[in-house]
View 1: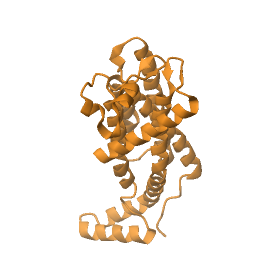
View 2 (view 1 turned 120 degrees about the vertical axis):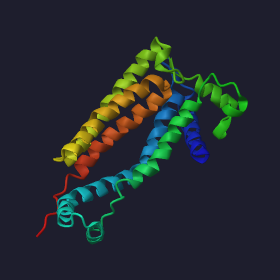
View 3 (view 1 turned 180 degrees about the horizontal axis):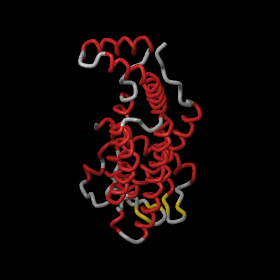
View 4 (view 1 turned 90 degrees about the horizontal axis):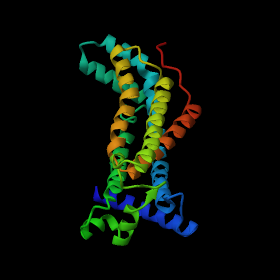
Length: 258
């Protein structure tokens, strides 16, 4: 994971340097814009780089949804005969050129990258005094001190909601945006494929729709403002991405038996 942390740090430092050079060490509205925009464009860079994986995930999900009726027929036809069922499903996947793992593999690849983003931003803690810790992942001590002391509308990006005052106001707005965009993105994704007729699966859909936003509320209260900014930015990107995907890849007709 240290390689991922170093890569993400390099991207953050690159974008900070780019905005610092372009805008001339910008400080206005009690905000250190070079670091704030550095975090925003770090997230955008990662999301753009991973966009082909999201496309692959959507296509795989659509393909599997299209095959669901035929898969249920095979399950009913070969109930109790697992080897035959697995063989028939494998032949179905091969015939239709569908991978049952295509919808999950991109998620596995994305996970360590997003964990790395969180780790690097949480690493910027002004309370850290050890020089070796400050200079992890390619940071200089001066860069660490500058980033860990940066502000967003008067709220230190390293502070958490519990700090009170301005931090609670800024963090509260970001948390509200983070929760709202997560709910809207998840809802659009569910509505695109439709609510499941299976009661258990429908319950899972409801848990995902309402449970994930609630978990983000808890996370937002304990994460630093910089991390909440990262999460809000990536959620806004995800919402726009979902809207585009819904238009670009409308629901496909299901596969029925002849």
